[in-house]
Structure formats: C-alpha cells, structure tokens
Image 1: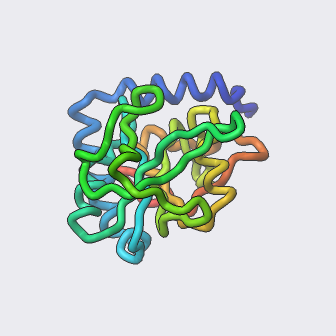
Image 2: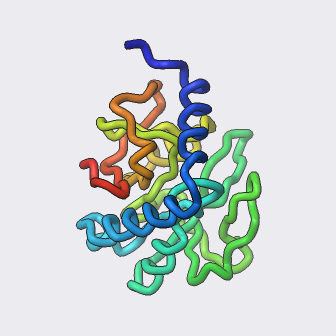
Length: 191
C-alpha cells in the first residue's frame, strides 16, 4: 500500500491527535509520564532536553517538574536562525517561571535568565515532539527539520512521547529524517 505524501499525512495525523478529548489526553499524559519516569533511559540521564508541549501534544509539563524535582539538569529549546537556517539552542531552566512565549507562540526559555548549553554538547536524553511515529521508531515532525538537524549533529539518546493514536505501522520518511531510540506511549514503550 502506498503511503500518502508527508504533507497529507501530517494533516491527517494532526486531525487524529486533535480529536482526542482534553480529558482523555490528561489520562494518557499520566500513563506516558509514568512509563517514561520508570524507564532506564530516564533513570540514567543526568540531563534531559524536553520540548514544551503546545496545543494537543503529549504534555511535558509534569515531566519537566518531576525531572527538576529529581535533580536532573533540565533543558528546553529556543528556536534561532543562524545564516537563515533554523536551529535549536537548548537552555537550562531551574523552574517554569523562566519560560516565555517564543517562536510561533510556543513557550521557550528566557535567555536573559537561563544558561545556554554549549552548541557542541547535548542533554543525555532528548524528548522530542512529533505528529506521528511508527513501529520502526521513525518520527514525523512539523516539517521544518529542527529536531532532525539537532539529532544528526549531537550524540544523545532520543525518545518520542506520544498517544497510542499517533503510532502507525509505517509513516512516510525522507533521507534527512532521524530514527529515535525509543517511543513512549500511554500503552507501551517501543524500543
């Protein structure tokens, strides 16, 4: 069976995720959080890069707060443009009060109060967003390549977090797409 093109697939995946009720998403967020927190990848990581959840994405707020409470070094991305190429710079946060509205309205760390992770370093564990994931640990993002470029340039363990409804047998991929190390859902961990 031929897969739809990436843009069509993105629209379908976004609509499917957006259709989940807020109450159901909260239940699933709790299960995802419990699975990730009990994973070896989380326990071993002294530093973790999170995305700050936005709209109907799997919630990271509880995970960020727990990681801070557990004494992990927590980093959030800030979108930057260097030589017209969008990139992610990660900044260490000590609390959610250090986060401000940023690129596309997505909360980002405030660089005036947060320390930037040197560009050649990466968090030990990187939690990445996505619209769709597959059983081979492929990830479909939002089409700008921010995370794929970051993953290609840094040595870090990568984990997607997603609702089970975001997992497909196969998703369309391209040559620049990076496979993840694991995907944590409300139902399972794909390793």
